Each structure stands twice: as structure tokens, then as C-alpha cells.
Length: 137
Image 1 (cartoon, helix red, strand yellow):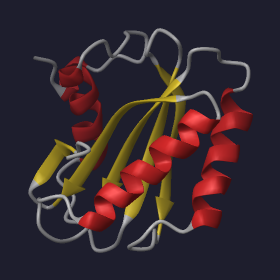
Image 2 (cartoon, rainbow, N blue to C red; image 1 turned 180 degrees about the vertical axis):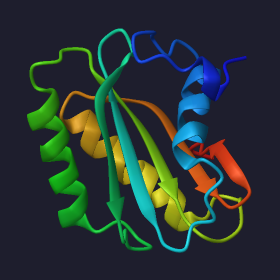
Image 3 (cartoon, helix red, strand yellow; image 1 turned 90 degrees about the vertical axis):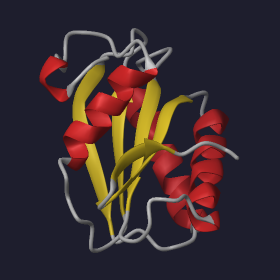
């Protein structure tokens, strides 16, 4: 298992444990007071690129314009990085269980990423209880 102390930007994040360790490192035990969407771009070898972006004040439900703008930004930044992927983390107050809105965000962002030829390497939900993968179920 990979821990946050094992994170090295030159090393690929080859498994789910390594991706979770990075998301946990970013969340760092925060008790969220508002929704924030974090994204980390990974190169074709799944090494983190030197850009970690928090988007604050994310609405409860995905807004089509915001989702499209994120997709365009990812495309612009990663157009010269064939095989790039994204690690996304939705940080929010409330219970650790994924909600309908959380799953809607995951679906919307996965669709817009795919529309630009990008893959989601992982999508995590971060709450005061910690960080966990948010699956499609």
C-alpha cells in the first residue's frame, strides 16, 4: 500500500492505492465547509503533472456550463499530452456516503472528459470522515 509519504512526483501512480494516497494527501484531514472540486492531471505514465487545481464553491448539482468549461480547460492544457488522464476529488461537507448529486458530478465529469479523449484515472469523495473512491453504483 502507498502512503502519502511515498508520493514522489517522478513516480507513476500505478494502482488505486497510489491514487488514493495522493487524494488523501491533498485532502489532508480537512473538515470541508463548502464543495470544492480538485483535479490533478496525470501524464501518459500516470505521473502527476505540476498542476493541482481546486475549484471552489462548486454547486450541489452539476451545471452544464461549468462542466463544459472544465472539459475545455482540460483539453487545452492536455492537448499536447497524449494518453493523459485525470484524478478528480469532490470535497464537501456532510456524510461520507455518496449522494445522488455526487454521482451526478462524477457522471457529468466523466462524460465531458471522455468527450475530449481523456480518461478519469480516479474519482474520489472527500468529507470530514476521509477520502474514498466514488463508484458509479
